[in-house]
Structures are given as structure tokens and as C-alpha cells.
Image 1 (cartoon, rainbow, N blue to C red):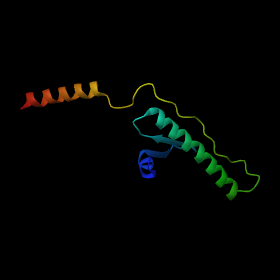
Image 2: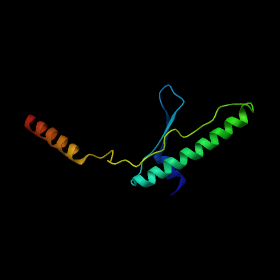
Image 3: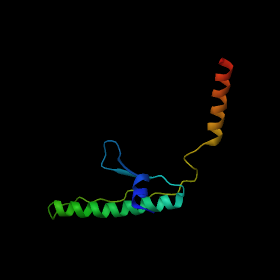
Length: 99
């Protein structure tokens, strides 16, 4: 995988009003996506802890840890073909009856 492809599908966002960061990856293979997110989380926490240690006093108690590892989802998040097809049918019927 190319680095640009990885970065295009990887997002980091701060959880509202907390010090937590949520890492998400969108991909076709749920097992691969889980491995990528867990690896990025581990590496990021190590790098952040190292950076904190270098910039703070030696007795600093701050660290960065992975709070919860990613797990493979049992059900796909999207798409929902039955729901989308039914919605398209209903909207099409409404529009065609209106014309």
C-alpha cells in the first residue's frame, strides 16, 4: 500500500471535550482495517509519549496509551442496499405520480 493511499483513508479526530483521539480507517477488508488502526494507535501512543517525555520535566506523569483496541465489526456499516433500493423506489413512485 502506498503512503498516500493509507493517509487518504485514515482519519484522526478528537472526541468532544476530552483528551481522547479516535482513529478511523475506511477500507474494503475489515481485518486489514483493524490491523492498520491498531498499529497506528500503538505507534502513535509511543511517539506521543516520547514527545511528552522530551518536552516536559523528567518527573512528568503524562503518557499516551491506547484506551481501546479496534475490533472487526460483525456487520458492515455501509452500504445498505435493501434500504437504499426501497427508498429509491418510494421516491421514484412519488415523483412519477406527481408528474
